[in-house]
Structure formats: C-alpha cells, structure tokens
Length: 429
Image 1 (cartoon, rainbow, N blue to C red):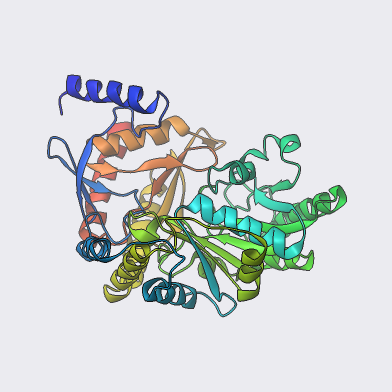
Image 2 (cartoon, one colour):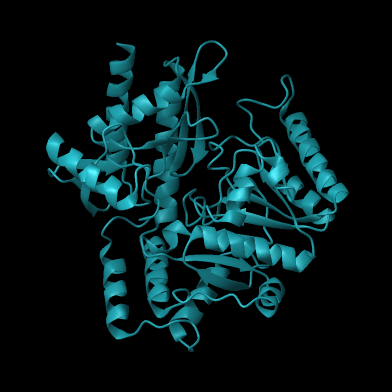
C-alpha cells in the first residue's frame, strides 16, 4: 500500500473512530488476510504473527469458520431457551479445570467476565476489598479498570489494595534468596490485607493473572502464589485467576495456574475461547455461581448462545485433536532457550522469561539495567520491517512480547530467530 493511500486511510480512521484510537508500530500496518500464523498486508506482503493470541488455533481456521457458519445458518438465540450446545460446552469447559470448579457464567469479553468474577466474590464473602498487583490490567470497564488505576490513584479507589508484583529480576529487596524474597512479597500482601480490614472493606478477593502477563511475565519467587492464595482465604477472601491470556494451553498446560502452582476459587477466561468470536467465561463452584445468580439479574443477550457454543467446541476440538499443548511446550522451550543464548551476548537484553508460547524479552540500558522502552519499540518496528509482528508490554513497556497463535511451527520460530538476529546486528552494528 503506497504511503499516500495509507495516510488517507489513517485520516479516515481518525475521523470515523476519533483521533487517539491506538495502532501498533510507528508506521501503521494495513492487514487484510490471515492464514494460520501468517498475516498479509494490502500489498500482499507476508508476516509471521508472533503476537496475537485471540486466533489461538490460527487465523482463518477452517473448523471454526465452518462451525460458526453452520450454527448461524441454523439457529442463534439468547440463553433463555434450552439448548444442548451451550450446556455441553459449559460442562466441557468446567471439566478442564480442577474439581472445585463446577459451573459457568458465559460472557462476551474478558472485561465482562472479570466484572462477573468480582461481583461473585463480593456477594459470596459480603466484603468489598480486592487486592491486585501494582502493574496489573484486567479490562476497561469502570469497575475493572479501578484495579489498574488504584496503584497511582489509591484515594479514588479505597476498596482496592495493590501489592508490588513478585519478581526476581528487579526484586523488592536485594540480597535475598528465593524463599526470603517470596516472604518479602508476602509481607506486602499481609499489609494489603491489614489495610483493607482496618478500612472496613474487608477482603473479598485477590485477582491475579496466573503468569502475571501484563506485569511482564516475571519469574515468581518461591511458592508465592500458593501461599498468597492461602493467606487470602485465611482472611475470608476468594482467589480469582485471570486466564484470559494465560489459559487455553498458552503455557503448554490448559491453565496458567497449573504452571505457577495454585488453585483458584474463581477462574476468568476470554480472548482465545472463540478464536475471534466474542466469547468469555467466569467459572467457580456451583455454590458461588448460584449465589451470584440468585442475587443479580445478570443477563447478556449475546452470551451463552448456540453460536458461542458451536465455536467454543470447535476451538477445544482443535486444541485437543492437534495436540497443541504438546507442541506449545516443545516449540516454546526451543524458542526460549534460543533467546536466552542470544541474551548472553547482547548487552541490551536484560532477561528472557516466560512459559510455553508466551515469552518476554526485557530491554535494558546502562549498568543499572534501567528499563529501555525506546529500544523495545525500536525492536518491534525493525522486526516488522523483516516480516515479524510483535509488540512491547510489561510494567515499563520495555518487554518484547511474543505470544503467537498456538499453531506456530518450528519453521516459524526459526524464521523469527533469523529476523531477530538481523535486528541485533542492525542495532549493534
């Protein structure tokens, strides 16, 4: 697409959507088609998608598209009618979790699913207080974005307490071994619990992405997650895991909480469940779900529909029948090890972290390992020029975020590494 044509499309976009709607890359990309892990722009140029987790079983997935078309052509109504598809999908979904997860509330977005989870916890406990990390993001409704804003606007969100996210790369205290570092972060959690109790809000829940994705995929010290969950339960609260990014075999396991060693009372899922069709869910014990239903009039016209069920089944079928959990683990190990090797010889790569096909490469500058957001932006732009799509994220927006569709193959990983090597040479040369 020529530069003048692209500029005109951008101008139209800003009029139609309002200036400020976010776009990736210094020079925005006009994508028109996708196939598996490949995307194609308006000029037909091919890119490897190393970022988008929504099409988890691949762009343009045939099974998903056919299931969607067939169901839409047959029937799609709201959830106030009996339908075998949605019942069997909910049964299948909760069966993928641990035994304490029994029932589901189906929604359309991660934000809605998180909000349902928060309401569930508050109704079940009779308390208001919620604990989150100081660099979290769980959605953008007024109630859910408060979890993000509370770290910098605590007075405006008195029923949210934040804690420093547990990590080894920039630890809260230097000179501690792994167990001592976990203790130090748990002391912060104890203080947050005390604050909510003293304020009269009490502890309704802690909500954590199970792999702390938006925080930058930090290596979590010791057994922090399991002990944090127990501390919250001892204070009368529930544990909510946000599996919107971490779930659906992203880590090589169905759920991120299986990797980080704890079991939630409530789990929230979203993005990849529908491979592009809006589909999310909040799952918990039958008691918690029925308590929520009894005390609310929660209803979503487009949720728990036959269309969602058909697509939801198709996505799980693809994951299971193609053995994607196994391939995610295998290719993820290869990719992470290769990046660790490259970090050893590159002064501006401070750390490589992650699980399965969710890997973060932290960009730093100077001897003090200062976060280098500008370098992360530069790397993503240079990768795009070489046919690789990625982005930057993390608490300081300095982490190269690699989160491709689960159908990524070894050849795609090798192509990415070749482009990444060229970017390193470009920058260091």
